[in-house]
Length: 238
Image (cartoon, rainbow, N blue to C red; front, top):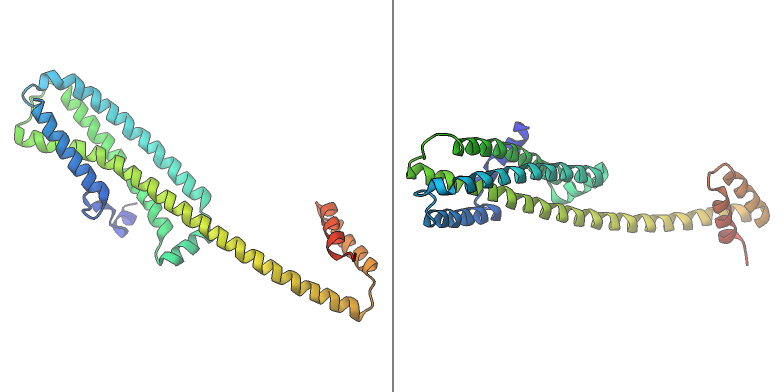
């Protein structure tokens, strides 16, 4: 797992300045911190203690719920992406796109686990007899706590967006593949018809004898009746 994180530079995702979820989480967490300080959360911490404790429990529940989202996302990815489709996507994007997306889910699960442990520690600290931290430590701590929760939420939104994009790509490839198969099937039917006509004409085989022989070969098939009806409608002369 750690090797894959290093391979895709996952450890820096939480502070990746190039990603929108970083900026959204950072800006909103700073606004929240300023508002909480304005409301007097530091000076009147005892008044806010119950609210903070309950909020931490809700956050814990949310992070655990997001772990279920990760498992569902991975199951969907594995279910819809077969090896052939994965290879075609990787070749078109010139990189291991499907493995990289799965690694996003893997990293997200890791981050959620760390977040749950972190929030548990904060929860027990808030409900302990420890004195409140100095303001210079309190502000960065509360900002970071809000930031990590928001980052995980926006990261989940980003993963959903990536899943939708992958679904769209897979649908496009399947449509192209079906079109190619239809074209090749048509070409094969023309080629087979030409070969049959040549053999029938060369050996003076009647159409009834040809259909009887063809239907005989189809008798052992599970859907022999449908096959024989198709042969009758396709090869029988008007």
